[in-house]
Image (cartoon, rainbow, N blue to C red; front, side, top):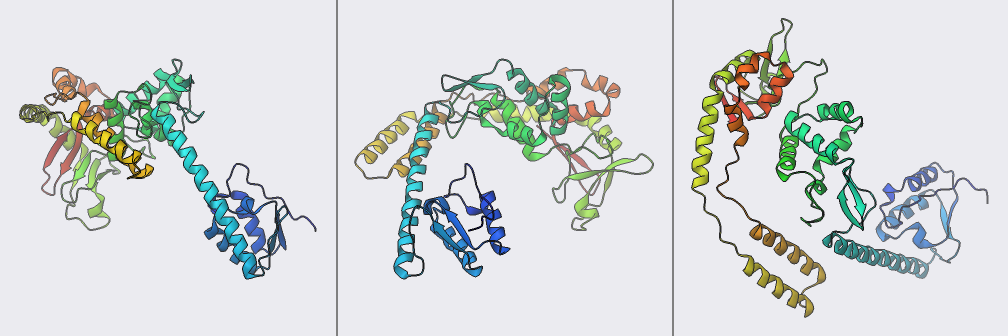
Length: 404
C-alpha cells in the first residue's frame, strides 16, 4: 500500500459529531476527490462510536468504492452476519461512551455542589487554591473597574479602550462580552448560587446584563457622538430611532422602519437639540413624579410569609422516593435542584419596602444641570444614559421619557 496521508484528530472523541472532527472532514474530502482506496484504523471504536453517523459515512465510502480495515480487529461487511457484528460492536462502543459520560457528569455535578473546580481554566480575577476559586488580589480590581466602566458608559468598545489605557491589558471585545455574562463573578456556577465568593455586586452584574440585552452604543464610523444614541424609540412601532447627520451639521433622530421600510406611520425627524432642550426643562419634574410613584408603590407591598419548612418536607419526601427506587436519579436531581432553588429564594432576606431610586435622588441633589453646558458630548451621553431607560417620540412631535 502507498500511504496517501495521515489523519489525526488529537483530543477528539469518536463519539463526537464527525463534522466537528477537523481532520476527519479532511479525510472525507480526499475520499470524495477519489484520492483514497482504503482507510486504516486500529479498532472500530477509534473510527466511530455513533451508529447513525457511521451509516452516513459508509454511504459516502461505498459511492467512491472506498473500503476500511481495522488492523487489530476483523470485520466482514459483505455478509448480513458481518454487518450485524459491526452494528453490535458500534452499539457497545456507543453505550460505553454514554455510560462514561454519565459517570463524569455525575462526578462533576458533585464537585460543583461542593464548590470545587472542575477545570484549570479560570476567569480573570480568580485563581485556584485548595481546589476552590478564590479572588486573585493582583487582578480583581481590574475586573471590578471593567464592570463599573461598562455600567456607567454602556459601551463595550469604550470599556475595551479603557482597559488598555488604564490597565494596559487588551481584552478582545468578544472575550469582554463573555466576561460580562460570566455568572462566576457573582459566585454562581451551574446552578450553585454559593459556588465561590462573589467578585462583582449582583446589582452591578444585573445592570450590565440589562444594558447588553437592551441596547449598546454603536461606535460611529465617523467618530461622531450622538448624545441620545440607543435611547430614542418610535412611539408608533416601538423600534429604536437612528441618529442621522446632514450636511449642515444638523443632528436628528428618525424611525428607519418608517423612512426606509415604509412600514411605520411615524415619519418625523426630530432635532437632537430639541430633545436636549425638552429634557433640561422637564427632567426634574419627571424624576419627582417617578420617585413619588415608586414610594407609593413600595408602601403597598406586603412581604410573603416564608415557606421554607414546607419545602424542606418536600425534599425529605423526595429523598425517600429515590431511596425506595420509585423515581430515577435524573428525576431526583431535577426536582432536588428545583426545590433547593425555591428554598434559597424563601430564606434570602428581602426588604420589600426598599426604594431603588438612589441614582435619581442623587441626580436631583447634584448640580448636574448647572454644569451641563460645560460638558462635552460624551459626558452628556453618559449622564442621560445613567438615568433614562428610553425616550419615546410620536408622530405629533411629542416626547415622553421613561426612567431607570
